[in-house]
Amino acid sequence: MNKLYLSKNSIIVTVLTVFSMLLAGGFVFFNRNKLFVKGVTSISPSAVLTFSPNTINTAPGSSFNVVVNLNTGGVGVVGTDLLIRFNKDLLLLEDILVSGNSILKSVLPVTSSGAFNRQLVLACANTGSHNGSTSACSRGAGIIQVGLAAYDWSSNTTTGMYTGNFPAATLSFKAKKTGQSSIRFIPTEGVTNTNFTTTTDSNVVAIPTGGDPLDVLITPKSRVRVNVDDLTLITTTPSPTPTPTPTDANTVSLYPVADTYVTSAEPNKNRGKTTSLHIDGSPVEITYMKFDLEALAGKNINTARLKVRVTNYSPSDYNVKRVPNTSWKENEVTYNNKLDIGAIISTFAGADAGTWIEIDITNFVKDRKGSLMSLGFDGSGSNGLDFNSRESGESNSPKLEITFN
Image (cartoon, rainbow, N blue to C red; front, side, top):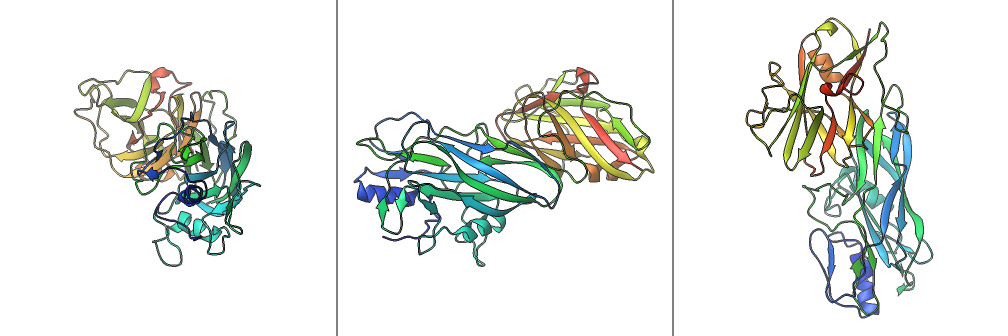
């Protein structure tokens, strides 16, 4: 039996090929996103993949672990693909421990001897290349792909079906720089992988009695929000809604002098007086904010963090971008006359309703101090993010917290 890592398709092709040979299963075929079968006995999706913990607060240069848990939902399974996306610019995948058990014995990809090829996984995830070649890393950098199979390479035999709940893998990361991002499965509920077309998704495979292999994974919702902060660490438990507090001589909190959002669903409508701001990819919704930084002229800026209070959960990632126009008025902007937005300043992950998100925009504030500053917020996900506007009251309003000397 050939024991090569099949890099062009799902890892689970290996175990499915084995089972189709040894168990005389039906014909299996794939499209670019999901696992499909012909003539199967129906099984409702039951398996769940989750991360633990769901929030990481750390500093540049620090390491942390994320555990991937598999719960088969009472169904016997023969293998799983884990496809996980992370921000390679913010994080380094230092190591990966794939647990396995007495049934899901084989950890994929494998070397020619059947051993787990850890170095291939790490190299592909971090750089998109292994031993100077990209051919074994068809998914590119920022993607972790590993698998577990109910198979014993040493004897070329299958090992049955696993039912239960166990930690399938432990991912060890190191934070490279400050910023916010997320670690998530491919797919994640509500997220479209617009630039990911060369492989199947994560899957958990069962073989119904008298049927063919079938993906029984419920589309994952779990994700890890990563906050990398070089000054103070944010609590991992969402805190109560903060209210502005008196500032000392080296700290100032600034509130927007204008904010609004536009939507392609109502291209002529102005939303400058609404109490919430929206970002979405479908329909397209873009948020704008403007701050007056005149009081910061001549100051030495240490940090500048924009804080927004979420009112609608979203699992997607979003961008803060430069907006050259600083003369706009919140009661005049519509989708049809929307403001041009420029280069990305920072990226951030969505969060649960009631949570405050902090976004580091220090360098841009340094560049714009002493003048007006406009920001634009956009994203490509179809499950949009909503947060309070300045019209919702000072305690819930977006705010820019700046330290200086």
